[in-house]
Length: 384
Image (cartoon, rainbow, N blue to C red):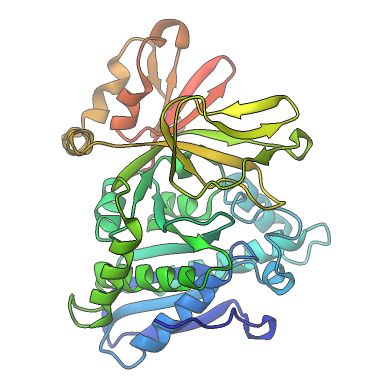
């Protein structure tokens, strides 16, 4: 796998490539550049399309460009983060207003176009649909996968020899892959490495190739490069835990004057009390022994860092067994726990009654989106 230059502005388009297999099968939709300064996914996707162009394939492999306007300016976004706007109410509002509405900003227009493109690919699908969001980060570090905690998505990402992380998607509202999970796709986000590191392109190429194989676009072993891709990603992981979970997001605003301590890489270990960052209120230290994810070393962003921990094999096995038994049906029998009538995948917890229930009980059953609302706690899981 050799390094290529980042795509030139005039080469970027919404639909970058499409391979249509002779036989029906899965559709894999890959999206690069949802953040405009993260173009490695475009290059990686083109490599995979070129490699598979003359192979016997099943189904479809489609590559879309994300935020074209931001990519042309080489900025994360123009008006707002395009990976924080995938919320049903916002999308309904955009569609009601229409693409020609003068008040729409750059990301509004980009989102409407990308929404239409993805829906079109789904409408033409001849089998199950998989969606992969290709990213890079401002900090150096190993590639890792983020995904919403559903059993189909657990099984899919387990085919990739990189660290897999539960719970990060559920910490942030409006994420692209989370939206499409709720609309019937199997999805994940891959963070391939640092923005300007040529190795990040190699990592994303390897992940996309292995994901296409896992989805069933081609037979296992049909493409010799999949062995090289697997070995590359396995070597990147080193001795890091295979599975981790996010337990906290450190959200920031521009007025916070947040500055991350230099030198942190993605998935670096930190000890309890270690200095992580500073803001106008003072020092920010590690709450316990754990892992630092997505430390912010760029000007734009609302996430200072995420805090994670390893997940044991025993917890994973127990979680999958309990969910396979569909014990979720009975969780609202607990005192102080009620199911939201409008959204059955959401539970409302009366903290006066149920304050002693550890959140890990809900996490085990996939309820990882935790929010506080009007004195109540809500926990929500992805459908599936």
